[in-house]
Length: 210
Image (cartoon, rainbow, N blue to C red; front, side, top):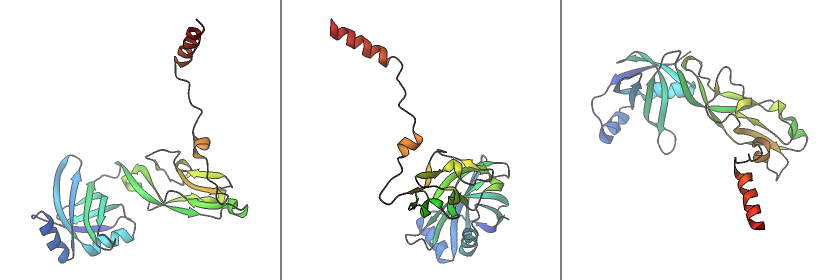
């Protein structure tokens, strides 16, 4: 279920106005997307932090505007304590969106019992999915991770979503201490022959004989 965030219109702009809003317990925001004009908004810090705690990526905006919106970007202060600014993107349930979500490890890794060490390479992954099915997180099932193997983005429990980037991106590995998974050997094909290269080399060899 999506969180509801009440928003108000704001007329002032600039860093001074933003600081004033934050002193009042408000977070400056902007709403854009779907070919409509941008709207400058503000929301209470409590509502924003509640949505973050619940892992909400899509929220229902009420008050000055009424629409479903994707939390496109949320800026924090240097210490990651106070939200400074939030970008909302208008969406409908059927819109396909790209979002980054955390990866959680699930299960016990059999490769560890064989002396391996689990390396958590990527703690989040970018996905493409519909706005009404944005997961709070996705699992990497390390219960199937054997020694010397890796779990890639395409192997995650995606529940209808799909990797927005390289599906071969390595997420988790299990290797012996001091060893590395040879990603080049695991995921890369042999170097393809460049068309015409062999013919050129043969021609150079013939020329050398003359």
